[in-house]
Structure formats: C-alpha cells, structure tokens
Amino acid sequence: MAGRSEAQHQPVSITVFIDDAQEPLATYKPPAVVTLDTTQLDDGEHMLRIHAVDAVGHVGVRSVPFIVSNGPGITVNGLRPGSRVRGTLEINVNAFGSEEPFDPVRAESEGPIPVWTWVFFAIVALWATWYGLEYFATPEAFANTPTYAANPALAKANAPATNAPPATTAPVAPGAPGAKNVAAFDYSSLGAQTYAANCQSCHGATGSGIPGTFPPLAADPIVNGADGDAHVKIVLKGLSGKTIAGTHYSAQMPAFSQLTDAQIAAVIDHERTSWGNHGPLVTPDTVKKDR
Image (cartoon, rainbow, N blue to C red; front, side):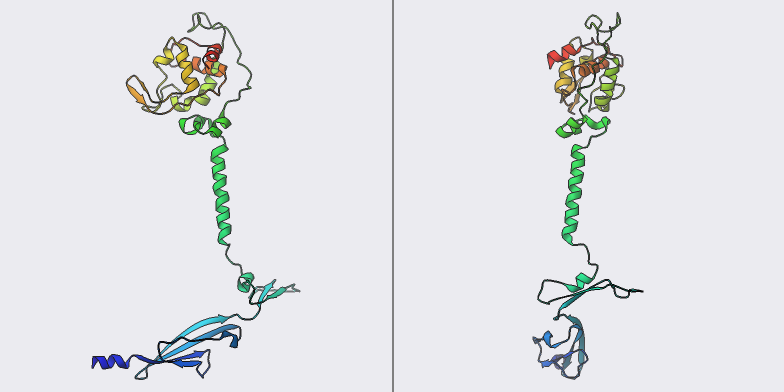
C-alpha cells in the first residue's frame, strides 16, 4: 500500500504557461527541456508559470518572473522615474541595438563604482603611505634611533646641515677638564644641541641609557677614558653587541659620520663633562684625524 501511495504522488505531466495565457505553451512528461523563443514576446516583464500534476490530480504551481530585452536599449538623461519637475525640461534620449555590448539599464541608473576604480584608489593610497614613511622626515626624537637610521632616505632627510656656521671658539678655562689637551674650542652650546638631536632618544637626557638596550654614558669607562680616539671612533663608525660592566647591549648604535668634525667633537666633549663624567676633551682636529 505504501508503494502504491508513493506512486500516486509522482508527477505525470508538466504544463508550461506564459503570463496569463490560458493556452499552455507546451506540455511535457517529466523530466523535460523547455524551449522558449523570447523573440515572440514583447520586451518587458513576463511570467513563466509551470503546473505539475500527479496521478491523483494534485497540482503544483511555480512562477518565475523574467524580463525580455530583445529590442533596442534606450537611455534617458534628464528625467528620473518619480521625479517632481516643473517648467521646460531638456531630456537626452538615445537608443542602442541589442547586439551592441551595452547595458541600457545600467546606463540609466546610478550603478556602483566599478571594481577597477576601487583597486586603483587602493594602489594610490598604498603608494602614498609608502612614500610618506620612506621620505618624510621623522621627529628628532626618533630620527637617529637604530630603527630609522638604517633607512638611507631617512638618514639623508634627517642629517644635520653640514653648511652650518662653525662654532665659536673660546679658551678653555684653566683647570677645567682637558685644559692641557685643548687650546681653544667652545663645545658647550653646540655639544648640547647635537646631543639632543642625535643621542638623547637612546642614551637619555641624563645619560642613563635604557637598561639592556642602550648603555648609560654616565660613568662609562670609554667616555671617561684618557684615550679620546676610542670615543671618537665609536661615534664615527657605530657599535653593536657590546658588553659593558657585565651587561650585554644588543641594540645597534648607528654611525654618525654625516656630522661635521666640530659637531662630533662638541657632542663627545658634552658627554665627557656631563653627569659626573671627567674625561679629557677632544678637538675637531682629533675627529678629522680619526675619520
């Protein structure tokens, strides 16, 4: 009985109608392939109605709306559907053959921006971001840290001017540190300025450094050493992977060879006379010799 009941509900015919027509387009035994010649229909909206009948007369119905567009496409510019207008209008109307690669519906509507346009904008934005990071000068506090100093473009953009007027010279006061070694070189103003612009971001305003990353300059044996050449060569050539007083410092100190001889001598003398240090002073001639 169960098998007989299932057989009764199996569809035995499919009838196809177009729109509200009472006469069917065709009747098939399922499954079927329906051939629809849209050239026999007017352009515009239509409805495909399908009736399926089983062995006991139950009817299933499904409707599929579709749009026929065999005729010329028409564009209208100057009048939108539902527009409220007054006075005289100037409306541009045109028509295109259906065989042309043209979508009149899209031409008349405010379609979305094409994907290629978004891709182009994204490429331009990425390029602008890269250019800004690569060539725009960074703040002085970061310009010469190991992260930024490795970038040649940034190093060039942030390099101190080499045509600055030479520092004024004045005799070192008798009895001052390094008085026997230096005849006349006023490092105080230029040294503090150069240190703030190039060294302070890593070694700190008080020369205390950053534990485990950048060594302190206060009480440093090189800074207080009698051999000023060692101090000069570190500033000129940079340093990395140094163990100082039992602590290993892995961060890289970049070379500052782009500074003038006077700037390097001044910043070294600033370090050698600050934070309790008492190392002998050096002169621009010392830097010139070691360069």
